[in-house]
Image (cartoon, rainbow, N blue to C red; front, side, top):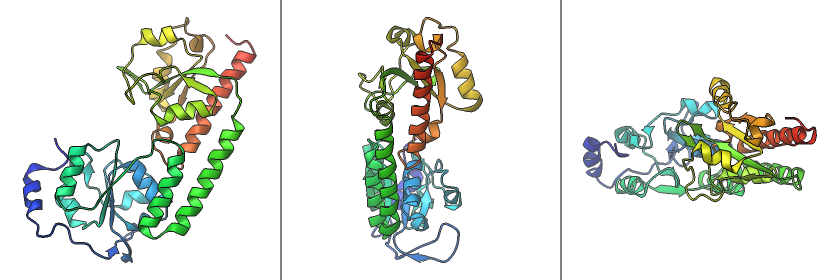
Length: 295
């Protein structure tokens, strides 16, 4: 299914002049309208960035996957990015619709623009881009004081982490996104930059797609020092256990198979630095195991 429901798309095109711009936005807590833009976010990480930038009170609609911060749960839902409820979207009268460049196709963006919506495409590919996005969203919403402070705090913490883990002994790392089939992340993905920051090297950094499918035999051949699994709870335990039979892999033999929280690493927001700490912690554990001769 496309981003627009077919029966609603034609009707939406017939709205004279598209969606009218308005000057107020309902507050996220259901209170009185606040002067400013009316923003719709079509990605969970964009929603999180907007709230972190002090623009949460101007967010009038979000995609179904937006679940952080808790205040986002009180904002009207307009469906998944691939199947938006256009009727609902139009009733929100947004003055700006913000979409993720990596998660929205050109066709989907064009459909939104044909509705005469003001679409902003944003993309965060590197850790430094989070601070840039916070400042941009602050300017957009007129909340630059909050946004700039958040960006400065983020940038300072990132610089501290880079300095803290600089010069660590290198480890070869396999990052597992999912195991049925087996997916990893290439050197083009921000998680690969995180691994590098922590003194690791992504063993599949040479692959082109952001999330390529690989086979277990290739992982065994590349023989990582560490296996990081992007899953937690029972699912993380299951995926970790599946590696126990492969004792020929250095990471398995040393017990260096760890889980990390995908919710932290999968979104380019200030919380991604909590994910960085998790990755660095796991790599430090692996270094300790190597130093102690653990097998």
